[in-house]
Image (tube, protein in one colour):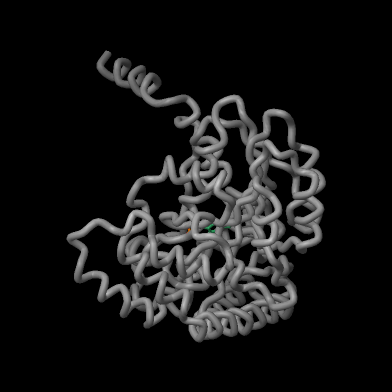
Length: 378
Ligand SMILES: *Cc1c(COP(=O)(O)O)cnc(C)c1O
């Protein structure tokens, strides 16, 4: 009797579109893997969340320590100093910048500002997991468009998927978890045809890892198109994932909306101070870029030698196919965990035979490679 009452209460509480959300599954924490598999924490290698293998820059640590002396006060709600530094660097008006509690915050704020029940949000299959989450959280309908044969965004197909009900399109460049990259000319051709009532988020969380030949001017699109917002992160190349800070760049019409619905103090003081320092630390960024190039070469060479397929990646991670069995990813992942190596299974992205490996330090990459060789017997 009592049980029946409880079940019906569970069915009554909460909005249906919220109950239907499958929560985000992150990389397993080191401490959890150590407990679960009886391993020594210090020996575990984590290549699972696209974090910076160099950790946080020293410059940012110093700035943060200084800011820590004054935590009795609220943060600067308008992020004056950081926004000014970004505006100068990007050569845009300060009013075009919105700071976020991670760039995740920018993605969610944009969804909340433009979409609701009855609306449609378009994104690619195998695209970043936050797009469906942000869509469902506002009760809008997710329109997932089939990817190209090489796992990339099919922009012409995404354009066709836009209807009168569409309010938002998410484009990840490069995409996570596939690492696929869209050339500027492809995005430009897409933006030219997107109707004005549709906001396009260009998610550039991995922008700093692009080669000089790949780099393009996304800010020019923000200047030209009032329906474009570019989002960037301090979590990846800048090494500040734990502080939660990112930003969006868009014209006033969009930033005004985000400002109305963001929490007044959505970015904490430590994060602001650290980001200002990291932004100026070009030596750290260069070191991290070089390390990533070397790690990518190290991993892909090993995959070639093992005869494994991988998707060419423009990020700080690589997607590798570890078997032909339908659940090869989960199986190999379990064996890697037993060996103390945490990577990311991507079955929830529709890629159950693949694993995503974040590029680590050379010795971390090698520990992973050796473990994988042993598991696959190659
Ligand atoms: C990591 C990531 C983000 C968000 O990172 P934040 O830590 O919230 O800044 C956004 N988009 C993609 C594609 C990512 O992989």
